[in-house]
Length: 94
Image (cartoon, rainbow, N blue to C red; front, side, top):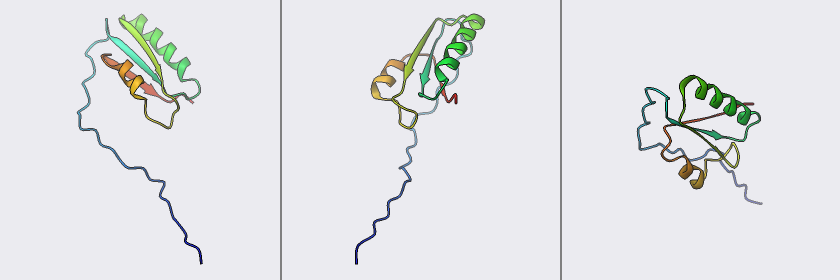
């Protein structure tokens, strides 16, 4: 008789050792990044949000980065490109 191998689809949970940074009190002159998760319409949403935030709050700079896909974490290169920004916006836009 053959052997049946059962695999678990549950991934190992990782807990950050760092506390989240506080949100900036104001956005004027700040650098805001948008991390595109490759979901449909996120780029459109991010560009519209950036335009509105720039117009209303006077952002200093906007940075756009894109993950390889929605199911995996951002690569070390993408995370390095986000270092030093004041705020990162990420999410879905299906």
